Length: 448
Image (tube, rainbow, N blue to C red; front, side, top):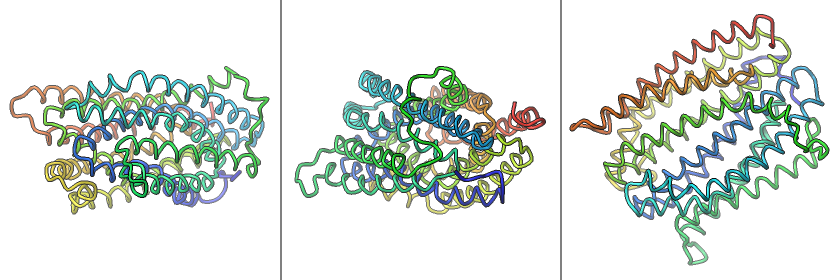
């Protein structure tokens, strides 16, 4: 375990973020590598895999329920120097990961086809997205085990093992993607099915590698089969923190689904442009997200130790770092957005849509950085409901004008991007106000 209640707050955040961002880059490369090779199959395949990726976002929301609750409670226990409670939370998190994985596998196979019919602009896109998901769902189910183990380590201030495993799985995915998608070496291309299969096989290796690490090297939190029997009080503790955080990600999923639905009248080219643009945006967000992810355990351990001033200092340091990163990323998207999109497709219509999306949407990046940081601090203090409230307010603020604009005869895609920018900036103010109120309650007498 690494004690984050002593030493420089900024130093802890930077050290953890530097390692975390490498692992997050690895996670995102799953999708970017797939997208690169799938782009050779045409706009329908690009749009299908992009829309199918939204289901992966739902799974991300569910893993956040598990991951956020695990990180917060283990960080609190580590701050109190309570190793027994940290181990109980970890092993109960593993039990929850099995239940969650089975649920995702069953629900995914039942709901994939109806979902793709609902958002797809044409039959080709719908079929591509469904086939991709059918092969990727086993990997998505296994993500829960990886998240449980990685979150336990993050709560204790350790991030290098998770990063190493993620890089291993990415390297494997990069090798498998051209072989399975394009048929390199084998001469038997599987298309979008190969994209899903490559990611699933890579995740299997990642789960095995992390399991080996816990069996052989990890000392502070460890596998204790006697603690795997469901402890519903512990499940309640994990879920009370994690459910709102997962709901926050589910709200983001609903926003993206609404976006796909609103632009389907413009055809699969437009959906492909938006799909690539949103994936690129998520990829270049990684340094900022790494800061927020790192701020949560730093603030969490200090909250558990009753060190309120260091919790506030963590927020200030994270906001400064987030703002600096987002200003640089915004400048990049203003200067060369087309180059970022053209790396994945040469289709001029798709490039045009993605370029406009990045150029306009980048004006909300600083606001997104503030939202990320506030969410990390809500997690650290063990109350993620304000973050969910902030996300719901943004969905409502976006949906009402967006649906109205879509009914107008002169409706254009750039109108949606501009509405999104405004609503994100408003959400940033809401998140900050809610965080100030939460700090006023939670940090007066320490943990409550």
